[in-house]
Image 1 (cartoon, rainbow, N blue to C red):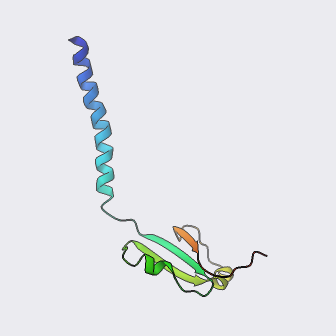
Image 2: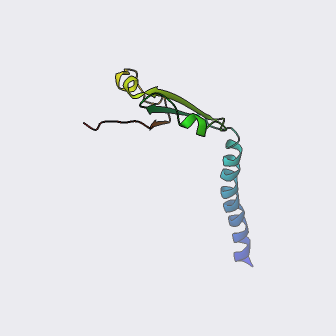
Length: 92
């Protein structure tokens, strides 16, 4: 009987430690994170914008490969993903 009395508070504390973070994750998921994507293609046309048209939290910026190579601004932290799309690119 004495062992049982010790386990009940321990089980309650463990359940609280599991349930509280789960509820915080569910509440935080209500606000969508804005995802920024830089799409690089040979001619500057976007293939991602049509595929992500129905998704509200995605922003796609499309530029040509020549513009990307000549670009001098820092990209660190500006975009969440960089997608190199269709085009004929040389590896040399």
